[in-house]
Amino acid sequence: MATAKRGSGSGPLERRAKLGGGRRRERELRIRVSDVEYEEIHAAATRAGLTCSAFVIRTVRTAIREQRPLDGALVAMHAELRSASHQVNAVGVNLNQLVRHANAHGQVPESVTWLAAYCFQVVRRTEAVIVELGRRLP
Image 1: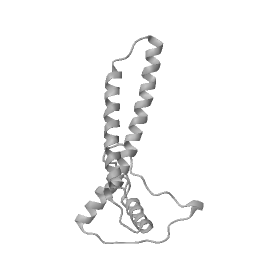
Image 2 (image 1 turned 90 degrees about the horizontal axis):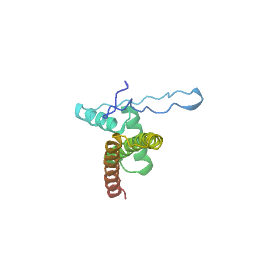
Image 3 (image 1 turned 180 degrees about the vertical axis):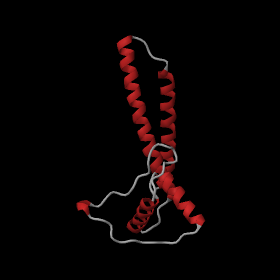
Image 4 (image 1 turned 60 degrees about the horizontal axis):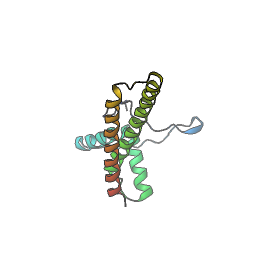
């Protein structure tokens, strides 16, 4: 399957890891799906930041391991938390640079206010996702 962009436009979709020792996957499993099923699978995979095949394999293997279907909302929340983690890290790097500038020049750049507001927004959204995730976990 072709690599597509995530819903947030932040990069290519994650593919399954290659097998070690130069081994190839020899088995092929084909399934037929309706247009509606395809769109649901494709949308869920995109939200999770995965290719369709990686999403299907991960979902099926999780269902086998846990002997229950994987809640698609949990996958989406996991992807959102991963995204928020990357955003918080980027904000932290920017804040460090601004603090270094403030210490060196004795003045606080205007961007600190915007960056602090953005940081609080990301943290609030992350907290909301964590609360929702807690509600869904057994």
